[in-house]
Image 1 (spheres, rainbow, N blue to C red):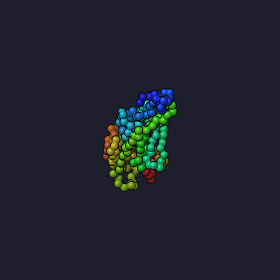
Image 2: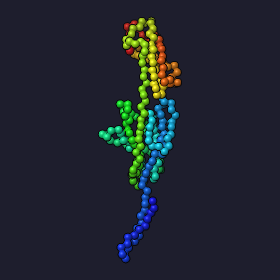
Image 3: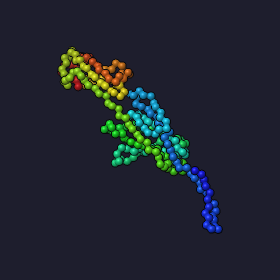
Image 4: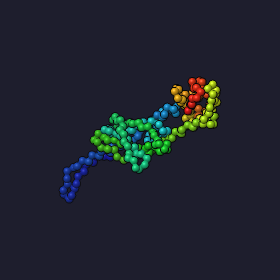
Length: 231
């Protein structure tokens, strides 16, 4: 791109010189992404450079850093939702000089499969209030966190009776294939009694992917009397 000087000539006639100043179009690109994963994953933060497409586990906070070709007056994200019937969303980015940044949290819809937004693009106005053109559209992929599964193996019946001074063997199995079990507990409630809460993982910090735990439940340990019911 270069400035130019020109004039019009027709026969012996010609105009004075005109000056053409070429101004570069305002553009902006994503410089890097910083991922802050959910605490329960125990994954350290991660930085991806020169990559605008987003792919991470649901609940991850993604901070994007963008750089513009000109000083920024205002900058924003345009988020495209999944489904043509919905309108796009925008939210403002903080900006200083040619740099802009903002954070979004990756989410899934209630069906646990569909992301709230499928793509995004960064736009800005320069100091002359000119809007950036031909933005780059980036993909957003949200990875579903599989829910843990838990099963009471024993007792097999839904309703059992236990003497006030008796015992009930309970066996529980649980599995979390993604990031391990951070906790496993028995919970119950009885009328006019404090809630029952029994932690079954002695070392939850290790977050095992699966666990099979046996526990002996004694009503007297929880001040449960004959005729009471724990659910």
